[in-house]
Image (cartoon, rainbow, N blue to C red; front, side):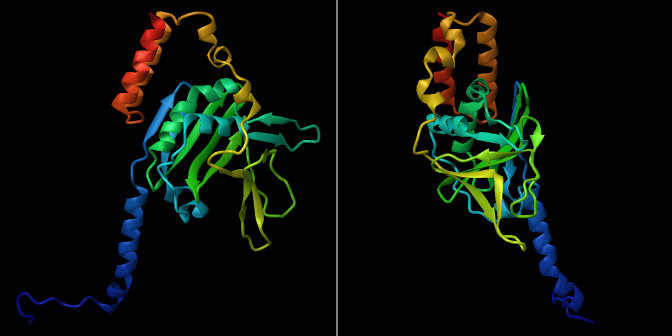
Length: 261
């Protein structure tokens, strides 16, 4: 009979399994962390757990939150282009100017407030199909990994030099592809671009745009009441979801109201 207060040793099998059970519990707890999600008129934004984004990203050290301005991020969005793999495939922009201006400010805020263990996942419904991908910072670089462009899903081939995807991203100065070591040799991931936080050149669409071109409503006069109410409602939702703080909310609210008067 063991003495009161004494501890009976664990069986050998249980003692051997204990570290793995603890590791499994911790892993499960990390993966179950709630992911914040925001949906707005064809645009979905999610803070996704780093551990659920694939082994390559899970092993990276994220430089979050990201210190990037809206103008710098806008230049990134405008610079992203892709090329269709067909014989007569064309070179096109990933984002239209109109789509980009709808969510550039929101995406900037998301990166500015991203945690050390989350990446930003986005989905944009354009007129030609869904654009879906992830963006995060690591090694003082901004990473753009796309899963689909204009409704066309990307497919990486395991054979070097063989392109089995309907499209690939195009590089510009300050950008390069992610390269992954494989058994058959290094694989260049042409749906994943690594770029300097501040690109060395501004996209021509950014430098040529005028306030009238960026906001057609400004050329036609002040927005109508329905449009104003819609924007104020969206702005309030951003504050409630923690995507903007009280100061930014009040500043933008004042701008909208002043534009109506």
